[in-house]
Length: 517
Image (tube, rainbow, N blue to C red; front, side, top):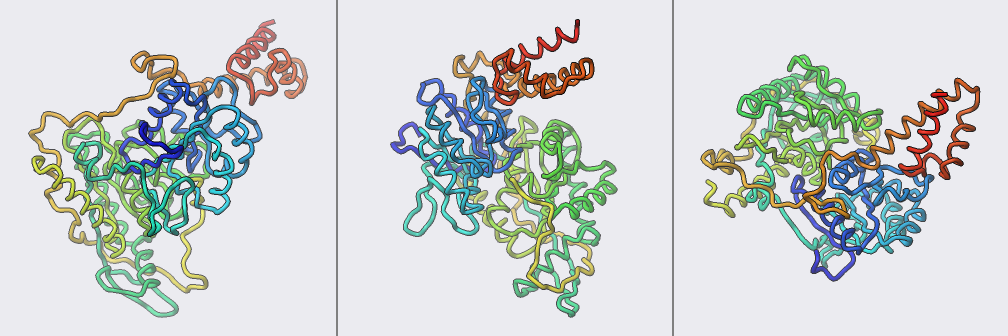
């Protein structure tokens, strides 16, 4: 990237390869060199923006996550912001003015989302065409609809051209990622379609519409197929835990919120422990994901929220229980299970899935990449998204899932040689050769990883301000607005939302003294 002559750089790297660390290292170097004085991270969801801010804060780079456009530019306490593509599209002029005032590095995380709506890409260009440098980080630098991504170059065939590519085979050789085994399950499905009773297993070739209905029948949470897959997945997780990874976790990707709730109830009765259930529109969803990542709980059930960008390295077993069959989405799901942990020495992940021909083809492509990794190392013999609505079928369709037969494990797509990717006689996995960024004014080794980030301090002080103002209001019968205005004038803050940490601390101190009197 340092040798790159342009102002935009696309790094295409497999999920779990360390794109966040690379982005933060880049930000640290550019801030330290004075090449930029501000960093903006653009991401697909509020949860991912908060995750970026948390990671950056541990390394001394303070980003304010999900700052509303109405609050204007961030205060001087911060190196920048982490905001969604939707937020940028809603207020491009706010971001354009901020990028013009201070030389800005834009880090676009999974930039294919800028094509989700035509306006998003246009408004992102309006906001950041003036940025000093744009770093695009993607594990899937393409879109299902083949629409162009801003600042990405394309060849004569319309294929995106990355400035640097780090694929899954190389990540396996470097032991940055885990290998994964796909376990496709067949079964006899029965459904009602346009008044006709139909029955077929996954081996039978069907028209596209009927193949989709067969898949949705298999995924019915009440069916025998789903029950058997859930039992096998929980048993597989128990085996993984007994084999040296006691806090290993599992993830079920469901179709919609009702589907997720039904699966969570059935899985809880199988495992004896209620799964963590996460919906993107529920308050506290990000916190529950973070808590699950650091716990030893067995299962997480979610819809699309955990499909991309969410870092839970202990996930070792997955159930693909959604009818989505695009390559982009499938690879994002696979990326949740290939992140490595320090132990155990041998790490294989497992994804249980319907034996649908399209899904098997996608899995087979990843299997070919894994085999290529073995060839590279012969000695060696892991949004804002609306998940509330059910997946839609054809307009006016007349379809009803009736029953799904006993699930049978189809031929595993990956051969047993995959288990030899990490030989048991190896003393330990090779360390990841990545450097963590540090605070721009400090050397990397001087940074305390447990330091409180600026956004966490600000949230703590704002919460304290609300409590103190409420207490003063009860004692004095003054309105909250009147008290806030008086404190803002005393600290020369325009508003609580724009106040610096120092101004918040001084204001809270004034209120504490008043209450003490």
